[in-house]
Length: 432
Ligand SMILES: [Zn+2]
Figure 1 (cartoon, rainbow, N blue to C red):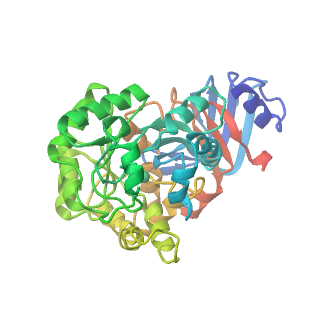
Figure 2 (figure 1 turned 45 degrees about the horizontal axis):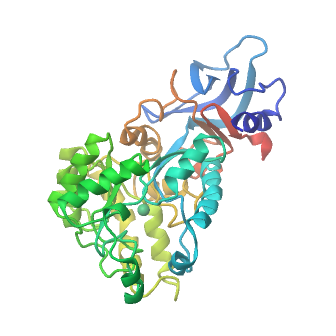
Figure 3 (figure 1 turned 30 degrees about the vertical axis):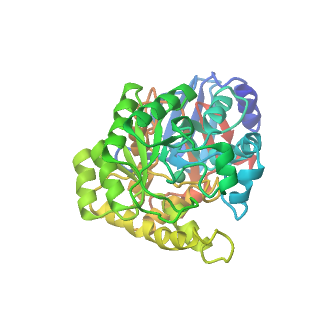
């Protein structure tokens, strides 16, 4: 399946390989160096067997018969990573009632389209922070059955009773009585023992990373968007158990107290970080905690909160208030020296429009080069991987290209027209 995708995409050019394992030379007019954040001049990238075999300056002369793809006028970059998506859904006014009508299979079919859109927009990796679909979608993509980004999946998020990601929030008493209270298996904990069990259950379910909802959230059917929802001891138990399995922990947090507890307990990243104070920033720098702002989701929900009936009334004021704040926080965190990595929370907003987050980051006062590093070098560091996020010899051949120079004009990120993942071409300018 992967081979036929490659040969289809490459068929447009002459003398191209039928197999992705054959060497291919990419001639890039410019190259984004994710380590320095600089846009360099012309380079040739030789790809073989899914890896970058060599990176040569200029239009390198290669042995006769080497297939080549000329990316004239384009900047090549490492494939981007979105560290915060939910591939299993996309919010709409119907989302709340769909939870009672749709089967898991319905969400799985939807995710196939979302995965392809995400990949074709230049995102060769994503971290899926919550949803039962994602570990299965990850496997289908890895097996070549579905086209999509490499997925690092949390599976079901871990919450506390009534908290953000308690799957029974908003249910009436009849339904609650029938289902019974959710527990660690369903991702709801209320003690240190539950916390350990919930992490071990995620391991059993095939998760790659642990996600917790350290405070209330915007879209849950609950009143508070920022109250702390775990004790410090519970988060510590999650982080410590996660370490046993080599997992990092991502913490959703809007409110200050929940953020402090998560950082002190040793989570890897704070997601959203809406009410981040100077004290929290200090703590994050001290602990080396990453910040994944998700400005896109904030702007999206604040905009939709203006529309009558789009959200339930219990959600609407949270969407208006918290949503509007995140972009300002992102700029402040950058100036405060907090390490920032890229995430959109897509699945709130539309899958495939992920690159707009770069534009929002630059609007917030983050330099374009740093924004691009946040989705390449930094994202790989958050994932604990050294084989992606940079275009260097021996790394995975995850390479994208776009017309123009995104450091000079950030809007260029919206024009990706070449996508290679693991050496397989999924999109070329010729195919447009
Ligand atoms: Zn999210």
